[in-house]
Length: 476
Image 1 (tube, rainbow, N blue to C red):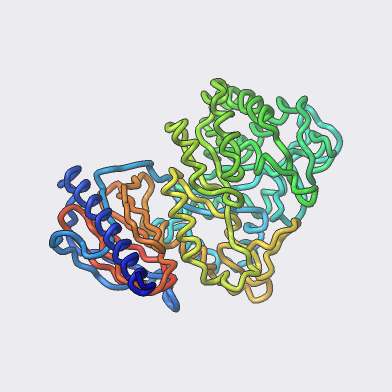
Image 2: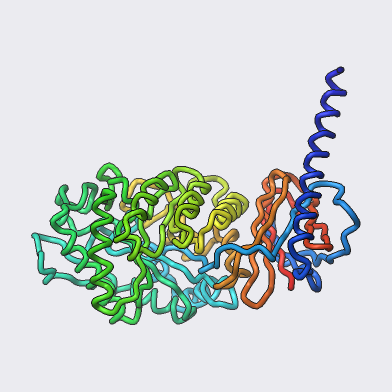
């Protein structure tokens, strides 16, 4: 067979297989449900080229005419999965410091844009228990010589600007869910004798649980209750001693949870405990920890970072423990990347994969940093969700910011992810149904400009996608 004919044959065969697969999906959908027929038109918002989550075309549903001529994205709202808690990023010491540099009216305006439910509505955010690498200095709440009775414990550092910023954010969004993570215990609890690197000494596990309790009680007394904690940020690395960090071995984390959980219950705190708080590739450790019945009774979820491994690894944990919540708790841009301001499609794909692999929430890294990724006492060139210029105080929004906008502005707490399938390549998709019945579909197109067909029950709709774009579609 001549090469050109062979190529034509293979191309047509591939298209035929894809169309056949789509037809089977449509047939299965029609068999499964006929009660989820769409009503009204589809509204759309697009980030691409010069557009930033801008309202775009209104699209009409049409009666589907037989089999689709090319692969479609098949939607099945009748098949639902996890409930969504929300979206946000981290109030690191560095982020709060930068927010505090803004004049009051400018900060009020930015917080309305980022946190108010009528705007982006960010509502699942992280705080740091003491210093992270994105801090103005290395500090804990009890530094110095060994203090097993924690007589020195103080959150005075946080009272200067972290707690006021958190109160302002929660005033803007009363439904703000906060979870907190330590990067390191006080240095005297560790083998290294310092917050930089090393590991916790086992004999201090009980005292460290009291340290957590004091933190939670002190924050609550300041009007900032915290809804969840992780025992340690990134349990499996000490970052080569270059920043606040602490190795927490698997057996130590199990023991710590078994001490902390009853202590919180005894003190009438409903704070949730999420384990791991590290990369996808540690999914095996998460399963092993959850197999311990004592830990399982006290652990509400698993926290994940995206730096190593693939999102599908989270599904392995879900499959083993389907009643354990999954949360994506860290990931952010690099301010030195040339596409820092425009990489919305990359982050749209990341967030889509996260939701399609069972996460209830997505929380990025620093909410705000300056134009050089500061304040920073660590070795990494991270950028903020927004940049606040150190001199001019000008605010710029990253590509990750616009990706968050496509999810957080439209997906409400309590929404349920629903089934969506396609054989198309280059278009990542995730659909949810909000508590009021409104449906949201986010499409991240990493390919060129194209038209895609949505198929839902006996209805279809054609959507034009710009190249390198994120598109949010909303309908009743």
